[in-house]
Length: 365
Image 1 (cartoon, rainbow, N blue to C red):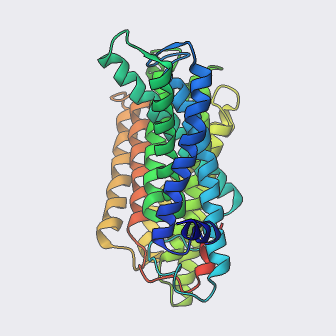
Image 2 (tube, one colour):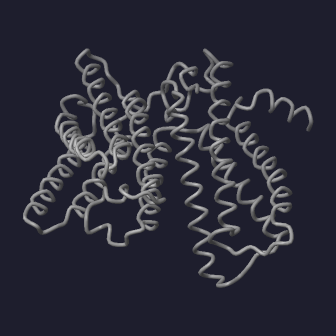
Image 3 (cartoon, helix red, strand yellow):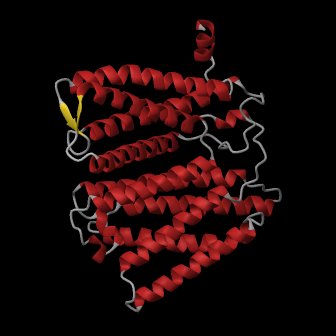
């Protein structure tokens, strides 16, 4: 047994089974550390399930910190596998793996995205449970055990997500991150009637709602640039025209992500012109990308191309409704945001060629 564990620690990414074993070891180590420390912190306390100073808050914050660290560690493990298996088929045979190197800001954005999803997920679960167990409190020992289990489960899931990160998982992370980030901003808004102005008003105040909204846009923008780098890399391009078209799609997707991040970097109340320029630019870039996609990427599935045309048509109709006063700006922005991000997420899942990457070293950190 000790020999097997020693071999596992030396070669944690030898195969899928070893990665699963490492995930279990990490989860066990996290539980062994977190549970006793939690007991020391909770000792002689009776913790509410949710709210300030609650068990749910402690679990959410601890799990978020652990999630970010474990994700970075997972990518380091993948980098180790790549460096040790150059020319081998053991780590380059997954057709869904990300091609190319994850840059440091890609890893940082994905780590933060995982941490935010974990933070909001455990916070939301605690809120739901508090409604089921009204006025209930948790004593120190069970609270410590629950904290250890919750954080260990988080570490296990995040590590596997990190080492198996592929376009499908990337699309899922982006979708969940956007939904949870937007909901958190809306629910924590100090002005309950923010929706009477526009969606960008969520980022205008100095409270936690504005921070959540702007940070969500910035991190999502970085994730979209990551999508631009990896999603298009899996699309077959044989002729010079196809290669050039693929580069154009990559550039426009990256520009879309940069403009999205700029919407968060420049709040509408402080940088009105820059904010509006970034938001308008996103709409223009998306329209150009959709209309030119079939010409630039002939291998793109026909149903997906038609979906893009439908999205643009709906956006035009929504704009007409807004001009006529039928819809307010918030409704239009919400619909447009859903359409654009849905298209980007579906794009990540559709037009790729599932042929394997011949160079396993390209899956490194």
